[in-house]
Amino acid sequence: MNSNKRVMLLIDADNVSADVIEQAVDRVKGEHGAIHVRRAYCTAESAVTHIKLFKTHSIRPIVNLSSGKNSTDIALAVDAIDLVLAERPDVVVIVSSDSDFAPLVIRLREKGCRVEGIGQQGKTGDDSKPVYDDFIDLPHRKGRAAAKAPAKRAAAGGRARPAAAAPEPEPALPEEVQAVLAALPELRAGSKLELRVAAERLRGAGLLAKSGASTKLFKKHPALFALTPDKQPNKVQYRGARGA
Image (cartoon, rainbow, N blue to C red; front, side):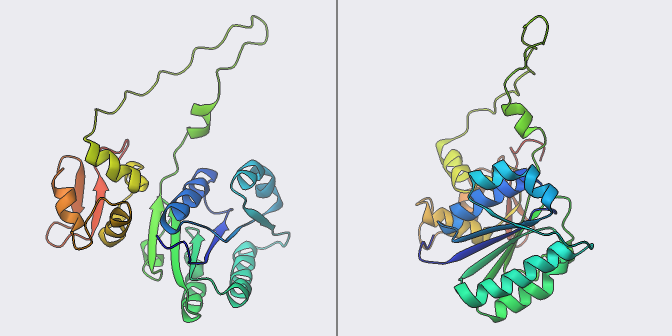
């Protein structure tokens, strides 16, 4: 993790869910240490819907009042170029599953930026991922907000409605596995992670020696971590992720 890097996070808030936005902010902060520019591009309706989320994470909403199918995408692209010229960031992270941003990604890289992408699992086409220096899909965790809400009382009797049954807890995990999942939270969420990214972050967390191979660490727990493809693995996935 290099806290001296300047990082911009640009979110296509009309394209991904609020839960994915929240996960994206946490992931970028965890990987880069700080986010210097945080902007979300959306319609006025989306801005109202996400206002609490934007306040919580200090995201500046850029409201698009223009009509047209791609008007929000264009607003994000124009602003990205202006910001890169003015702020000279080291890393630009675009949160969107839209493949239309490929020309923007190429132009930002020409300006000297590393360009990373975050999409919503199930919405991103495979052809839009290779253009980024790194790309990851995050799952939309349905019902997450509802699970946090307290049980409501009936208007007449004042009797609390029965809460939904809590999910069964995961079996106790080895301390080493718990530490790995803490350093790589997207694995617990069910996402696949590139081994080179995993290795960098495991070294940063002190879980992997400078010359150590992440594959050896994951192979110590074959029941919990899957390496793909079999012959020359370049990605890892947590087998214990719920719903994976």
